[in-house]
Image (cartoon, rainbow, N blue to C red; front, side, top):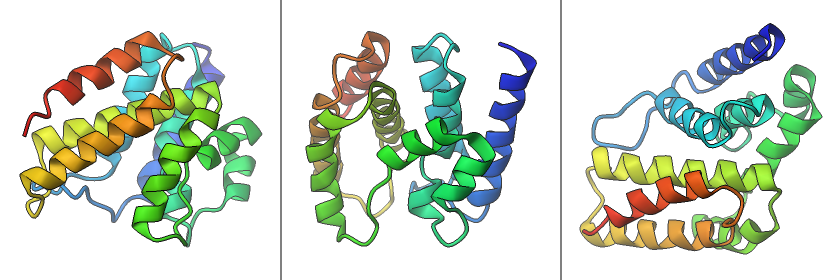
Length: 180
């Protein structure tokens, strides 16, 4: 990978760390949120053989518009990382003005209409989330709630299939471990 691309990836990591600096994962261990972003970026990098720097950058930034809308805007992403990255991030961003149940429903509805890159990113994100639930579930989540999340994630990913066999296999493996 060329130096300029590596620099952009590191800039995105730095930006994501800044944007999510006070955020923690919901898991019992309360991991720093950046751990999730780096896991998703690693999965995307592995799925693409490290050949899609725009997608790796998007993976690092995939939650900034949704989680940090007070500090980060679409225009900031365009200015710092370009239109392609900003558009991928926007594709996978939920409308936080909607109630949670509606946001989840819309993810299922929109999944088949995402771009190829956004589908890979969405599958990687869901795989990372399943891994988090398996490794460090939120303390207040019952077995039923975990099962519900796994079933919903499978619905979302069903609409994304056919874009990358490797990331789909990673998701499927983690899904199979969720026998609560």
